[in-house]
Length: 315
Ligand code: ASP
Image (cartoon, rainbow, N blue to C red; front, top):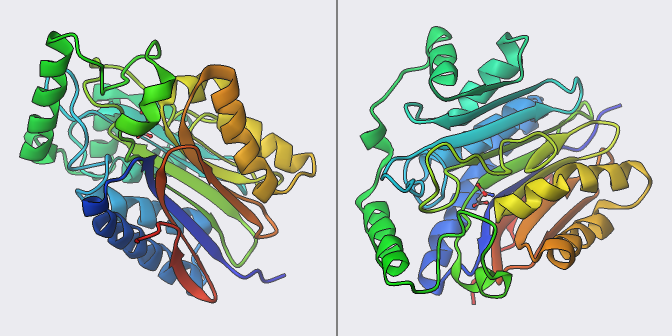
């Protein structure tokens, strides 16, 4: 049976300021275009998700790839996961510093390794052995981010409220307003009815080197299974990890609830249980989908046979 393909992408959930809305909307559109053109030509959901996420990694607007938030010691450390809902094959990398597109490394792990997850130097070596170029970390670092880190650390030293949320002991009430979460992700349904999901991030600002958040962990920030749903999350990683929130949501779709209903329930549960904040895109095998966030804004968009539309309201 031939299905009508769908691609949904997100580029983070936070209080995206007015002067950054256009860049986020454009970034979402570009990712939809790149990914959906593959789906239209009969490409697989995995290919479309990988391409859409790579496009957003290359866009310095987002906290993924070049332009990501910096670790406490001023480096970019990236995490990504790609999962194929048709086979349950998955590929993940974390704490990589020398790869421009960690989602491509995740694809290589998915396709070429008996393992599922590589970290640090081992992940870089694996990617390099399969043809990916290793770059200098400084190529991923923007002056904008050096300034942002300096500002956060200045506030930290002065004992002012923390903007970084690199841990989980901060005040959730203020987090949604001041913290920024620009992680990217995508979920897709292809013409053969296969689901896939991908998430890629630079993590949280001022994070300790070696910290891994929810984004690249299976079932936390990303999951795909044709018998349930495909999901990608963004937000404050530690609470999302504790609740294994991606799998929480796809399990409910498998049990018969609709993605439209489950996505807001999942985000409400995240807040009620742990004071967490963030956003989710959730796509079922029948093409129904849900999008939810408890932050002032989330950059997201969807593309169907009727064309692309972004969910970011520009006033
Ligand atoms: N969830 C990511 C993390 O905690 C951050 C984000 O979504 O922006 O690493």
